[in-house]
Length: 265
Image 1 (tube, helix red, strand yellow):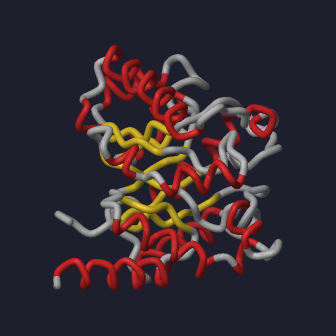
Image 2 (cartoon, one colour):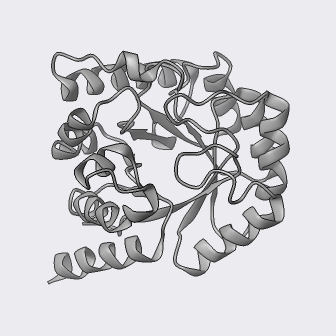
């Protein structure tokens, strides 16, 4: 392994995220939480002002900006800042505030301006597999063979990125666990991470506290899924994934450190 798998700490500035909605809605609380995640070992932070959980209702664009911009400004400079948004205008203003990565769970499908914005700005871009917004995503989890179909659909989005003029080295792929996927489909994607690490791009995996882990753990609440998340982080580190996106940082760093040490032996 050429480099350690990075840990991307999540800062949700939302009232309705599935794991921690409402905890960090105040900007000062969110900034303090981000600093705590950095102190625990986060290599980068992902700040979001819109919940993308199944069934989520989208906030107005103005509200998303009101949530994220002061948090970006309060945290920029300590670690690279990613902003989780599907809106091109939010991306423009986030980049202006200091964000270095745009994490677009729609892979450019939700806003036709997004790819042009990324190409012009030259920032890193997370292109995730996506089939629809939270209100409908559960109805779209229909596949004949989930792994090759997700790879094929992601490949189409990578082509769109290239056609927009985005530098290939700036693109990070994400298989989109839980986005238009059943629990069984999530497990299949994790069992075949090599299908994504072989696509020629860095890979981000966001498994933290998600439903498929809750199903495995007999319905345990999200905050009780961190140990299971760490097991996924171990698998990701073994497979050479670039980064894991996670709500809890210290345990993930510890788990990845064990893998790193073994791989050096």
